Image 1: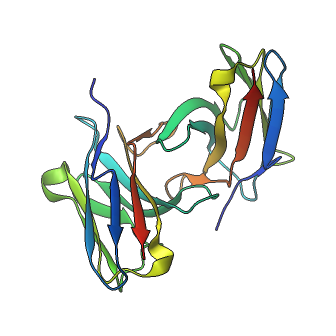
Image 2 (image 1 turned 135 degrees about the vertical axis):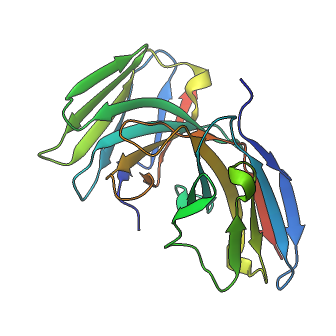
Length: 115
Length: 110
């Protein structure tokens, strides 16, 4: 089966500019996650969707980050305006459902550099 | 905040040797998972161990879980150069999505 797709793979922007990332989860996966992974650290959850509803966005910096998942399939994550500390890899993951004993499938990530 | 913390932060071994990584966490969990991340790529799920399990095997991987000590270990036997990667533990508390540790960087020298 096809894996989680993300685009673009790399993005370089200047601070205060805006950027958007796209994710297409594995077909049939109801749950979708966006993580931020800063160099040398583990992934940190930004937002979790169940179908097209938000389950957890407690760690999303809502003054500059936004995300949506239209029709419960694809998702976009936007940063506006970007700051230097937003430089990181943004990972999208999906899973079949939010229950006990599930595993997450990750995409290759988008590496963002803010200059 | 990071729930799980891996130890050591970095590990370098020779091909054929065993590699052991440890993970400690702070709150009660439903399950604990280990993931591998090759340089510049996404994470790949390796193994999941539930809170009522003490040991689990998958190929050359052996995971243990001690809920009384809030710790887990991942053992990779007969390591290969292709095992070079970062390894992360992730905890599922049932309250939110997985919380990842900061990882162990494993280097296997051929």
